[in-house]
Image (cartoon, rainbow, N blue to C red; front, side, top):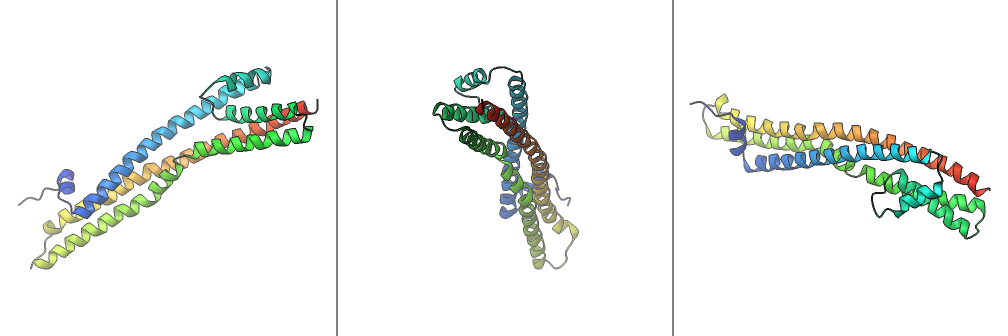
Length: 223
């Protein structure tokens, strides 16, 4: 009698534990891909916003005008805009209060560091999830494989003569769990490494902008 080794048959006839493992890996894989696409859009948008803001910032226009345009928007501020807005707002507030120039610059830098930290947290969101999926999914799949193989060999205890046809379905369904674990893990690891590099690159741009903007504020504070 020919044994049906199709993927659908193996999955539907797998033991309950193996099916639960497969379902978990399927859900994790789907969520992982959703996070990957979301992160892709976020990184592209962050780069576009950084380029646009730097073009406006270094165009030689009045910084007060640029600040008013940014602060007048009720939403949509992110990245360098948030850092610039926080620094310039604090700078203007302290100067109006007549604070000495050193304290004005120090206060502006603190405000920019806080804003930058929040932007870094925003960019790094969901990266830990991808790292967790990439590191744990193979082991979850391996657990399903081990469990399926255990059931296959346990069933041999009740027969006098073992054949490959008897254990093939059980081993095959077990190996599917491993394959699903790798299918979930590999894209997550690749995406994590890729987007971690992108985040580092963007954050470096934010840091550089903060330093350059601090120099500008320092010159204005001494006037």
